[in-house]
Image (cartoon, rainbow, N blue to C red; front, top):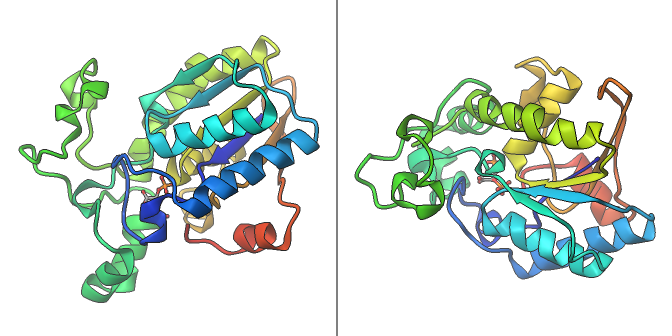
Length: 240
Ligand code: DG2
């Protein structure tokens, strides 16, 4: 199974909290997606099915990977549960400016704390997902105005258990193209990281992360497919 965080988005580039804001890839993000596709192709990966979010930075990354790999036929499940965590009223704000205003510790807690929820979007805010058709089928209590990583995990893991795992059990090779925090939630679950340990976990944009699973679907190994120095810097470093 391969996990892939989308390529750099325009708001990653501008260092803005993004969450459920539907921004596109930056020019660099398009390149990252191409490189991810090339690496997967060169390494001989094949897939039977794709899971992604309903946000275009993940979907476009997937399209580019599929095009490069000549796999545009792949059945695709677009799932809101794989969306980035909702960043509440922080969405659109610059991370460095917020750190200056509120202090780096609080901003770090908002970004990496497990249970802390950023301030919510107002119910009447036109950016609230309850006004977005793609979430219209959801019960109102499921539509977030802000999410902690814990809440994100509470929607990612049921999707993993009910839908993704049965596909793996049926022998399908999967790629999951999603986001920094929805993938951190899945990684935490797979590797059994503590709430404290997951604070140190960062997943770089556009670098395929392979999980090898045993018969009980427990990970036996995981590794990034980063063959360049740039890729290694992204894996060792963080932020976006
Ligand atoms: C970023 C992650 O999400 O930000 O929402 O700002 O993976 O969709 O680019 P992504 C966002 P941090 O949690 O690293 O601040």
